[in-house]
Amino acid sequence: MALTAATRDKLRTISTATVATALFKRGFRTQFIQNVHPLSPDQPVLVGEAFTLRYMPAREDLNQLSVFRDRSHPQRKAVEDCPPGAVLVMDSRKDARAASAGSILVTRLMKRGVAGVVTDGGFRDAAEIGKLGFPAYHQRPSAPTNLTLHQAIDINVPIGCGDAPVFPGDVILGDSDGVIVIPAHLADEIADEAFEMTAYEDFVTERVQAGQGIFGLYPATDEKSLSDFAAWRKAKGR
Image (cartoon, rainbow, N blue to C red):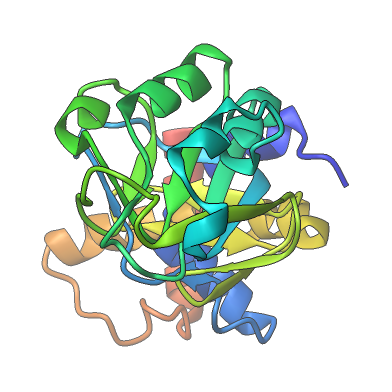
């Protein structure tokens, strides 16, 4: 199921934490990508469908500098084939000792209209990427090349990224906390539910900041909390 504009817009207003709760209700416990961080605190929210790249441990005789002359090289091909609006998600084996990519390739993704990029490894030129205003997530800055340890091997296949399963077409949401993976068939209902949850949490936040206690309010076990929320929502136009 393709990501609709309406679902994309809703997800941009929702936190990964709220989505994690909605997924947990459905039995999904490992969808948050572990140990990846935004390269800039000011980068936009990331929403898009996953387009994947898988790395494996490099075998030296197959991973010389000359491989980049081949237009079918998986890393280069992924950068040119990742669809506009999609997210390039890379399985770098949770190893940031060698770079998954650098600023030139990430800039190319941005110029092609890709929504963002995620790796459970690292990027070279991390400071430059952080200045692009482009949603990018990694573990930490890496050594200058990916040739020493990683070998790009597969494009758009199921991968693991930071211990999260990522299937091509799954919906990726990234915010200041990190990145979560929404199974494609659940994207619409998760977005709808999390959108409603966000409205209630905003109401709760206002009440707690005003001094109200959480019992009966969070979670909403008191009917008065629900009636107060309905009145708040009407007044706020939400």
